[in-house]
Image (tube, rainbow, N blue to C red):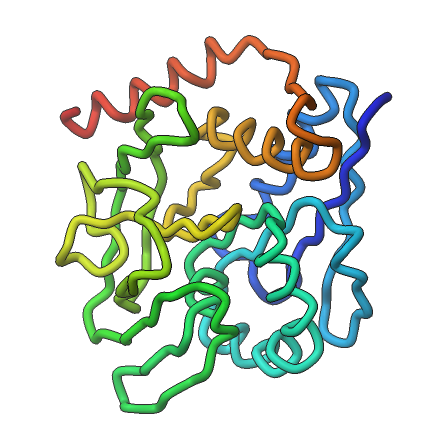
Length: 247
């Protein structure tokens, strides 16, 4: 075993809808196949975390009630350390509710303004109609050719970008962040946020490997390389879904 990594799973007991926990399983398995030990640390309310030790983080989606239970802990206990780690290049994937909580605020459809962590230059406005269905986002990861990420979205919040983030990709099928501007997800430094459930990473091994590679390079330097794996079956399933959706 070489080049071990550590992953923080944020509020997995409260934020785990639509199989989001599968993203952690995919990261751990694709590390294990390469002989990389990935230690998973659960971050639940009240936990003390040394964010300087963390290489990867995952923050899943949850019901509004689940978000309410962890919001204060996120802002007050984890907020300063997590924001500093994000600025320092922590590799973080946030889905749906976790994505929303990393933004500036969430304005509910009833007019209540809920503060977010402010780590991403996005804000979310609640709508009365849910945006539901399969989604395909064309994204470019690093210098690689564009890929088509597949997933499933189910959200009523509409997330809008400020100038401090870049789009993760362009929506080919589905609604994306707000159903208006064709943007699917956001990127800032090594933080990625989007609405793709499904789970996202088992369906999209290229993104999984991109996250692992970023974490290795941040921890061990730019020469840290990721051994290739045979992705024939995963990519075949990915292409089949894209074709079924007409692209």
